[in-house]
Amino acid sequence: MPVSDDPAVDYEARYRRAVLDRLDYVHLFGIDVPRETTEYSLSVAYVSLNLADELAEEDEEGGIARSP
Image (spheres, rainbow, N blue to C red):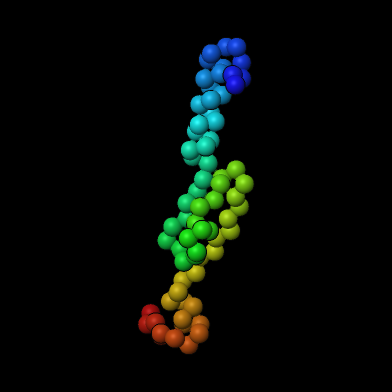
């Protein structure tokens, strides 16, 4: 259904919707999570990310000792 009688306005509205439908997601990669949780809609997603140094964690747990 047309948004407006003006073809330019109608085209712009359809174009915006197409861009939103195509690009409204973020794909997380390089992390160890289940496959179904790697893609989120940008319009509703809030993803909290925390980074950790695995070697530093091992040092804290008494694992591999690092030399300076």
